[in-house]
Length: 307
Image (cartoon, rainbow, N blue to C red; front, side):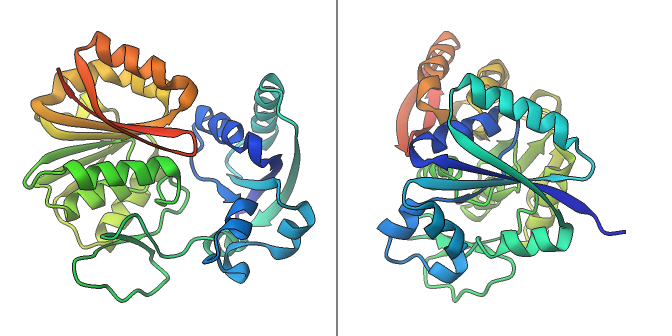
């Protein structure tokens, strides 16, 4: 019997896209397909055929984004949709929600056509497993198949974390990647010279995806574990990375203080502008100081150290 997925499609104004993303983040959902007309109309390098369902984008126009999420047959679509609708109503977001049932192989093929090789910066290249890329001198190539786990590298939070890791990673560092998702940040840390990386996630699907991607990149110094940070901490971390959501980061900070080396760096993202003060207040309470801050499209990432 074929596995099926429920496709949830949300058509929402570009002005409310960030609010929809944040709602999914609060629900613990990080893997979204987002068709943003601003990419199509404002970026000349976007390919019409591979990045968008042209008929749908042109029908909806320049000001409507299409957000898609897929629920497996093991989940409860009715319960999820009820909660989603309640949260959308509480935020007073005007949008249209459509649902349909698709087979697993159709979901995989539909999703993959929107994900292509891209660059984080001049040095870091992220390539899906099913594409080819001719590596240039000095470039670092990350092969990835995120599957149902968060961490394609395309979302602002992941890109911002990767930029900060590239900036502050020191050779032979011991690294923790908390909430590893696809394992993309752990893989980058390894390729930038980490001595050892411990990648941790509570989600079994993410653990499986991360393990697969580590093997895909032929790396032997990454250990992927299921669980939470404190339970799995074996030594002080020179670098700790957590790309999750603000509320979880707040709960995580007391544990970070315990395992972050005195000279270590904590890099975190998944923070929308309205949660920045919450994070800063909690960091200050525990004697941590933001020394670098980057943001993109309303999402923030911080590089943090002991005061």
